[in-house]
Length: 376
Ligand SMILES: Cc1cc2nc3c(=O)[nH]c(=O)nc-3n(C[C@H](O)[C@H](O)[C@H](O)COP(=O)(O)OP(=O)(O)OC[C@H]3O[C@@H](n4cnc5c(N)ncnc54)[C@H](O)[C@@H]3O)c2cc1C
Image (tube, rainbow, N blue to C red; front, top):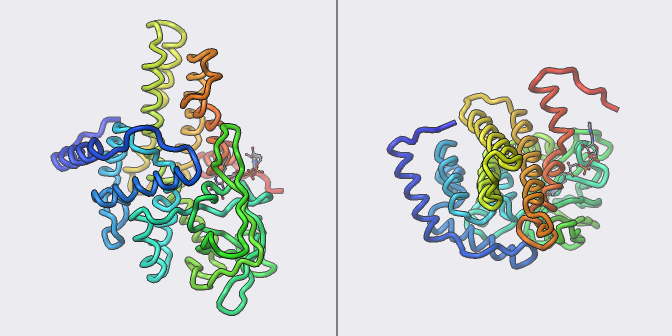
């Protein structure tokens, strides 16, 4: 799909390109830990001082209120300039915690948190998944009991990305004693420095600390930190997931196209060879994914489940591109390189943000209208 730029788009693209070319940091980003936190915060602060932080947020809350057309241009220029990954530790704050606060938060919550996020002063993480509540999020059991002006939280979360370096967490807990499934939950802002929180980092097979287990032992969270109403957390969580799966995914997809072009340059396949054909197929797949994404973004009333279509294809393509890179590298793939790191990380793509099986269920039931699966 080719989107024709208007005069306004052309000057916006030129401004984005000029700013990025002068400001994108040189050299690779640290992979994890305190150094990656500082690197990411410095980058957001730089974007903010240049007027490029949270540009899709409403102007009333410090953004520029840009529509999908300009966001697409920004992300195209962003990945072209090889700017820091959009999927780093600032992703949650900028792409779904901030927008959730704008949609459902109180004026006090917005006034306190939104400037910190936009100016690169706080990192957020998402505390939804539990050991027995991943795909089936509604079965979560971490509790928050009202005690005076506080909730007293006990339980455990797992797979919390960036919990070890985060300042705040979007935490989903069961606040109505005896409630079941989607009822009686609350979405609360949890200060990660609260007494009673223990973060136990998990090192993944790529050798990186990406996520952690988080334990809550009588953690007191003020009731003023509930977002979207006490016991109404499911609705707030669905708002969050809606943001997570929409424009936020665009930067990741465009980034994948750049990765693929790098691979094609590295492989330099002989015309007509099996590898040339495979890379051509991957390029066509990436273009198709991009077209589906643009179509969804620019349609007035897209079916929210189309996010699953994009997410599933993105995750599978990311794995296929990394696998192909390993084949091209041959024995060199055993060395620690950006490609081998990406390959090891790529296995998580079909799990994070909802597994491939769950995305297929959503596509089957809500897009294709197939019969619903029998619930256990
Ligand atoms: C890199 C990464 C980062 C993550 N970051 C976060 C984070 O920041 N915050 C957070 O809260 N969570 C995070 N997660 C957790 C993620 O959301 C869960 O891992 C995911 O939802 C799957 O849940 P689970 O691991 O409990 O697997 P399970 O739900 O136990 O699933 C196990 C297997 O059974 C299959 N399955 C389950 N139910 C069905 C069904 N109904 N039909 C067909 N198949 C089914 C699944 O597809 C899967 O293959 C992250 C995960 C990864 C890998």
